[in-house]
Length: 196
Length: 355
Image 1 (cartoon, chains in turn purple, blue):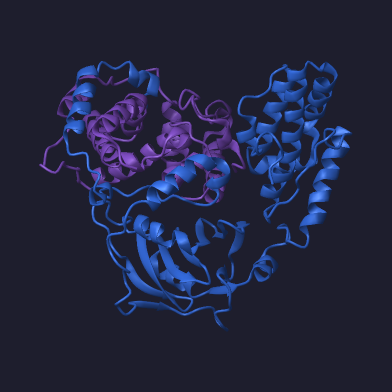
Image 2 (image 1 turned 120 degrees about the vertical axis):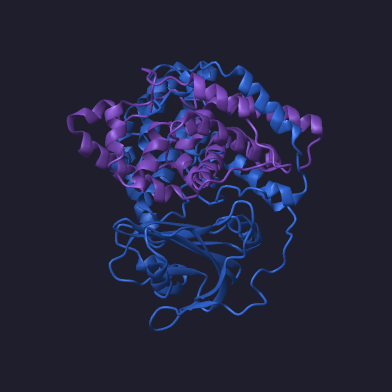
């Protein structure tokens, strides 16, 4: 579907406004330095801009963006940064702001530090599904979208990962293994269809 | 370490200038509509049939978008000899467009079959998984395009030419222990085989343990807990008997329950049947409420109020969240509310049981 420039810009502005915090949050929760989250965010939205006509609409858009951010993050960890056709690096100001303004400590976190520490003892695969579930508040179907897997694969994987984390946390587990619930408030009910 | 901030906390960070500047920077770059540039990043590996149940409209839109993209390379791998050839399972490759794994120690984790969208059988062994999926051949080129970006998001690759079950295919690696092969179309379908949690050698060995099968052969290969086509009518009746035993009610007057299902997986079959029953009674509640018929509404709420005792939902509960959805909706009715979006949530069609 071809969009006029005005339509494309309008659509992208809306997408950016609706999902900027989520994409930045996704990145910030997974990088070691705040400024790196700026790079991941910039590259993710650059991809979204380039692929706007192929981006899904509605509730599938957020998992799609997380999927893009996940690949961007993987590239970033390999030392690669996306550049524009002119070799321009985007988001320099955002990098600087993040570097200066992300706090070292906060009570407003998706989970307690001991849970984060326990999660690190799990396999990378278990960690990833748990992070998407507990940090981004995604359910199995959405996690499957992000990871490019089927729900049938993700559901038992998530279930096993939760069990393993529960074992590590012991009695402390009951209050920390529910998704935070502050994400994706627009998640539609159909996502629960046959989810397992 | 950076604290794992919530999105709400992030929204309160003073990043307005950087955020606004990045937006303008991005939009000042070329907004490519040429397909080359649209392919600058892979789409998520998507399009699995299961999502047809989840968000059918959105998926339809996404598929339409992909399908409209012109293909810009021709027949990858067609003019090259396969680098790797996987022999089929020990005795013979079998026939059919579905496949099963014949390696010892592997168990079936899930299975799905749909006459329109294709099917899938998932195997697991410890942390290893092998996923065999078959799709209608009209989707082949779209998936080939998508998979070509697996290894390099910026540069599509044809993958390693291989032979699987007597046909050419293409192999890519997501990671060192996660590989996939697309087998070219045959008998109106093409097949994808993805192995995770194993290195290439182990994956290659498994590809040599595949066997082509018909649907009856597939069903007969499944563990006893899966429901074959022949067993399905009895299984459906048993599910309904259990539900109606708890509710002491069949279906609302004037409603016919569509109990057709193609599901072999007991969880999915249970969702189909219990979902259709629940759809009928929630629709009855909505109709009664709209008509001001308190007696009918009370009866519908009562029926749904028993849903925590429906045997099928209790059996499904350890394996997934579908029962919770039904129970939440029942609570809504008890509170006098028609649950918003219940048709999508349960898979109803236009407020009537889905087929």
